[in-house]
Length: 553
Image 1 (cartoon, rainbow, N blue to C red):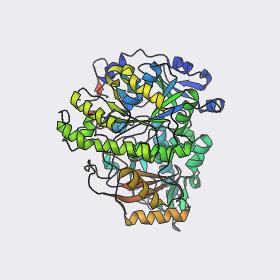
Image 2: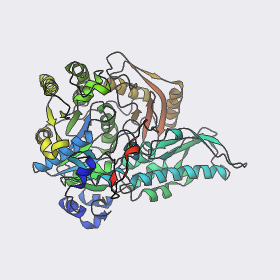
Image 3: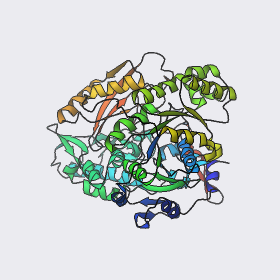
């Protein structure tokens, strides 16, 4: 059966039964039908003095283009912790329509380890991403309207982009204001995908509504003829924006196929944004349960680094245990095996590719000082020889590991992982950050690039150097850094999978996200608006004869 067929056969409970399990009063619940709801942020004042549960971070090695099942493992782990009679909540990001209709597919897990209702979650859900898109584009409209009616703020350069939650490479660079008339000032503009927008980052990092409004106010939208920043508050835009985001700020609650509570909120990409669900969702879950399973997008060099260096700093949290997901096929892929041959057995490619896993483990254990276990997400095509080789190598290096079969067996396929993770959570650890906030911007980027990626050198473009000087002159050099680069490699070259030779990280631009309160460094050939593949998933999505959705995976 397909994922969508499995999901439809699940025995879901009314969402009020799920929230009742969490001891949430109905007055804090706003239902969106039978199986999804929003939890009012107002509840936090009642639970803020509760003891925090244990936080479990799920990350992975560098993935193949189809992903390694990190969300599936996260869901299976949460279900398995529930099965061993522990109070657990799963916290995930919201899927973007870009991957749903593109190459990677949705983000609700797979097989018997899914969150539901999967079609709703993968598509419009409760409208959060639409609200973010609207708030972003309202600000754009107010900028151009201000310029049209006289430009009293003296915009010389507009840096704020419009956004759309679809992959559309044609919108990366556009020309606007082409209508005739002296009030129209043509200029080059562009679109980001909504999940890479600063508004998405702000929603996910804001601590409360006051913090949200303050961050929106401080978005830098452009510069005047004196090279001084112009803020969203100068346009008086923050009030209307927070009205659009007020409901979106409340976390969403759904359930797994096995009825484990799941809070799904916020959806920044990890290759071009910070890749974590919202701080308020995570902190709310920590107050409502004994164990919280969350994930950070793509490989640990991206999602986990940003989770730890950005989200943990801002939210004052840290993981008690970290799960690094690995697959045999991804390790062979990083060993140089051609994509079309990955289903074939090969110990030789595995021997080379396992270095990718060892590097991630070294980073998590020895650089960040975390308690780590490897979850081997087993596929039907994995051979006994390959699995045995992988587990033997991990055991030889004293790396805790567990074979996970949650896709085919649900929680039963992740019991061993759950038991080991619960024990791991009781081992004390103190999170080390990779850089100090008082380090200069170049030093922060160098530390991430050399310590985490393994680069020998960082090369800064002239444009990036100018922007660093500008950020320093404005007094924002002490913000954390969010490096945007390919997810497929430790390097900034998606084809350099082995990373077995010295490599540089090439920083082509530096962008200040003053509302999000971090600095984005664009590395290599990375785009903030992705494109569709030659054969997008959208071609297979539609309605069957019963008007049921088909093709989403």
